[in-house]
Image (cartoon, rainbow, N blue to C red; front, side, top):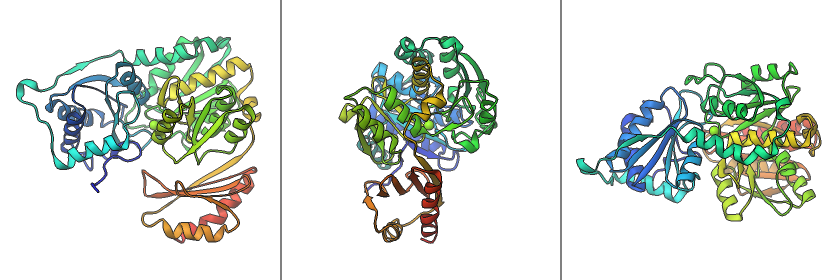
Length: 444
Ligand code: MG
C-alpha cells in the first residue's frame, strides 16, 4: 500500500512545515499530470493562501496544464464553477481548521470531491515522481476569471427566489468568521432584499475575531447579538463556507442535524431519498417515516454522503456539523444554499425559526472527544462489554443503540482523537450516557 496524503477532506498541514513550497509544487505537478487540460484554482483567505496557491499552480503549469485562477471564494463556489464549466479544480483551503493550517483539495469535473481511487492515482504519481514535465514551449498558462462569485450567487438565487416572499420584513445577522463567505453571503442576501447586519465579514487570514469552526464556544459574540431579539435569523459560516450554522430569533444555537431534520420536513418531498451519516439524530428518521422519505445512513464524511447521494439519486443529504447537500443544486456541501433554503422555509411557512424547531421530534445529543492515537480495538471491546444489552452497528467506529438511546465512538479521520456522541430523548440522559462511557475510553 502506498502512503496516503489525502485525508477525509484533502491534504492538510501547516505551511512551511508539512506544506512546504517544494511539496506543494510537486503535488501541483501530480495534479497537472493526472488531469491535464484546464484546471480551475481558488482559495479561502488564510494568511498562507498565496504561497500555497502559487506553488501548486507553478507545479500544475510545469506539466503543460493551464490554470484558471478564480480568486478567494467559498469552496462550494469553486465546485459550482467546476461543475458548470465541466473542468477539474483545486481548492486551497483548510476549511474550519485553526489559522495556521492550510490544505489542498481536488475537485472532479462534475464539482464533487475527487473519489478515493483518483486521489490514489495522484498520490501514486507524486510518490513515483512520474510527472509529465512539458517542454518550454508547452508550459501551461494562467488566466484570471473573476466571474465565479457571480456565477455561484446567481446559481443559488435562481433556485430559491420563487420561494422567498415577504422577505423585506426579515432581519438576518451574518457571521462569516473572517472567512471566504465575507462577500458572497451578504451580497446574495442583499440581492434578495433582506435587511442584514454583518459580523466578522471582513476577510482576515489570521481569524482574529473568532476561531473558524462554527460551534457555540466560538460564536459568543454572534449569540450575544442574537439574544438582543433584533434578528429573525442568525447565520454563521466556517472558513471556507461549505457549512452554515444557525441561531433562532432568541439566540438559541441550532445543531446541524436539527437543520437537516427541518429540511427533511419542509424541503424534501414524499418519495425523495435523504442521505445522512450514522452520527445524526433519530429525528431525521422519525420525520422521514412520517412524510414518506427514505433515509439512507452512511459512514461519516461529506464525500461519502455526496457519493451515496449520486448513487441513490437522493435529493438531500447532510451531516450534524451543518454541512448540507442539495442534489438539485450540486453534490457537495453548500453554505450559501443552506442559508437560502432556511430563509425560504421561514418565508413560506410564515413561522419563527424557534417555532419550526419546536415542531421537530426532540432529541438531545452530547459530543465530546479524547486524545487518542493507536489501536481502536481495545476501546471497541470495552464498550461492547460495558453495554451488553445494546445493539451494535459497526460500519464506522462503534454505535451502540437501545431504543432512542445511542452512543457512537469513532476515531477521527482528520485528527488524533476519538469522537464520542451520545443521543437520547432528554439532555440529562444523553449526559449520563457520556459519563458512563467516557472513563472507559480515557483508560484505554
Ligand atoms: Mg468547511
